[in-house]
Image (spheres, rainbow, N blue to C red):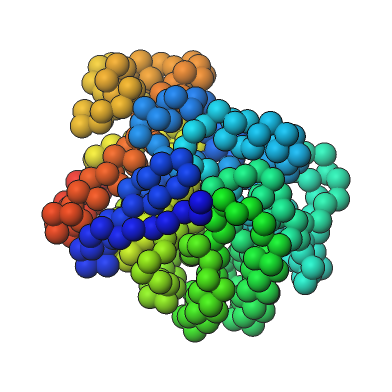
Length: 370
């Protein structure tokens, strides 16, 4: 079946819902770990389940290059290939492709995007149709439309042309989408321009996608602008379908997104931070390579229930990171992901109790203390 969204409770614009999938039903708001190359870096599928992970992301562009969509199809699809029995979302590859396109005016054409492989430099061409066909073969639960993700800032005229092309590409992808068990999300673009966000949202909704994503945020703009981008888009999205904010994984940004009505978040942020010895805590982000943690024999966060915090200390993890032992980044990846998943669990409870705003204010006050 395609995914279905069920709204349970609202507190202001904040929504507590359920996402029904072929691999179970999961509550929203939800944070989704990123497994770019069919794996969340350093973590096993069993460890993802232990931290209550549900939807995991994989990247169409990377899997297209290696091992190839046909190999994954012959393995029985992405779930069997990576041995993950939870729902999987595949992005379109658009963000990676546009970052590899050197001359935006020359390489981005109506048919698709010309670019060079980051692996061997060979010339490649990705179209909206090919992106969807690859995702059909990967057999993810949720596929994403192929869109242009412009950098920030760009001119109004450039953004207008980009938004119009993204809509044409969305319709082309929708026309070739053939996996009956796979949902397809449309993506709203428009940069910081309110009228373009409105037009993009309204026209994308007319296509009747299974869910909607707000794209083009967290690409270099300041926080105020990012939140305005969400505001300009979300009020035109339907209540009965999931709303996904792409590439956002900072705790404060998650709270701001939920307050505006976002249901789904993803980001490489927590595992990337972990590989650089950074950890989320209730009192803000910390760097465990700091000398002050050399003899700190307390957990990373004494309020956390993850495997890392139950069994290891800051001092030990600091030692691992300084010694460049990969177990350190693995432990911090477990912690950082669990921290964000636990955050959305608590957010859901606060929505049910009608106390979301109080929860948000209290969390932010503590988190921003230095």
